[in-house]
Structure formats: C-alpha cells, structure tokens
Image (cartoon, rainbow, N blue to C red; front, side, top):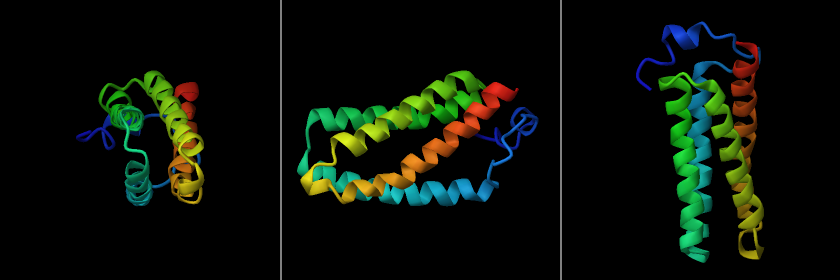
Length: 130
C-alpha cells in the first residue's frame, strides 16, 4: 500500500465516526490470521480437497485485492463489492465446513467475520458519504 494510508486521498475522505485508530487494524489482523490459520490447519487435515483449496484461494485473492482496490487504485466502490464477496466466502467457510469434527473450531472464524462486518461498514460509509 505504500503511503496510501497517510496520503492525501485517504486522509481527506469522509470516514465513519466509528473508524478505529490505526493501531487497531494491525492488532486485529494479527488475531484474525492466528485464528484463521489454526482453523485452516484443521480443515486441511480433515478435508484436503481441491474444492477447499479453491475456496481458500478465492478468499486470499479477495483479501489481498481489497487493499489494492481501495488504497492503491482509490476505487472504494469496487472495494466495497470485493469486501462483501470476501465476507460471504468466510461465512461460507463457517457454514459449509463446520461439520462434526470442526463444529467448535469454526468459531475461530468469528473474529474474521466480525471484523469483515465492521470493515464492510467502514468501506460502505466511504462509498455513500464521499
């Protein structure tokens, strides 16, 4: 992202009043990735299929491309669609791959889902108020 977060474009956006301070993003993503990695390690052990890997690959592409769309390309509308799709993919993981052997472990996805809902609202605020 380079200096996109401290750049003029992002600094001048009308951001949601509930936008957390910058340090929250790093702390949150650290927790999310620890939980998601733990969940995936069990998921890949139990269901290591091309389909599971494909769904994971879609999530990775959506996750990475959001930063590119929002910050680098300054396209909050496309980023908004992107983050909605990412949220749906992670919810799909929660619902679809939460069978008996993963029933409790699927709750490791809740920090990711909660954060995506917050991030989607932040992105949506930018879309509708700028």
